[in-house]
Length: 301
Image 1 (cartoon, rainbow, N blue to C red):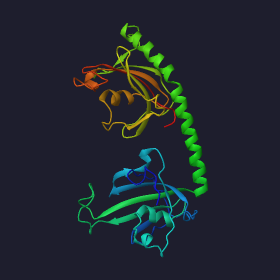
Image 2: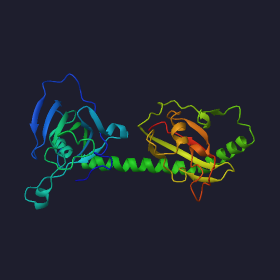
Image 3: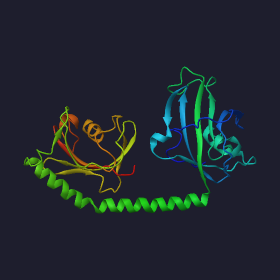
């Protein structure tokens, strides 16, 4: 089984309301399931790729949600050969098995019994049932999947090369802003938060406000107050991706990025207390260093 790197560990779904009377069933491996919506859509064949959304929950508490990842997970449906000992020995995951039998547009809940498991997963210690909510979104043949994957790779390569070509332009912009900041020419434009973060929004952006607990993509160029560049994403050609509000970046970034919208450009002047503090981040960032970050949030996340 080939499975996307963003699968199952992060899960989400929007179950359709007002459906017919719910049906129940059991998969070949013994997983019980409840059908919420049955659309009569296409069912995958071996070799097809199924795009879906799903969520993992304990009662009403959701633990993983694929929609929060900002991208649909997918899975290839493998052929089952009863004459192949290895195929017969492999127990499919509940998501894989349910995707084999539901059609596009169907939504189901798979029940995973935990009463026979000695060490229950974190968050499920006090329950005997784990719920997977799954909805099938789209089916692609292997040929179509490979064609689309090639197109996506070409598009990503084009974006990467375009970002790399912009590095000199961005460096010049940052150097100019650093000079103006040090000379006080930016004072009238600077805004300062209660924590001491100073920033200038260079372009507001017309997209959605960035939200906590959501993935964000950010292109950045980081420099010290003498103009020395210590890191930037433009040279790599790919934006930096992280989940806002989870403490995965320095405090100055958490606060500054939360001020922005998709499509925005800004520059942050981050005091050391909101950066790397007295220790710095050797060898490129000394202790007690004020950090300057030029950031861009792509319009499309």
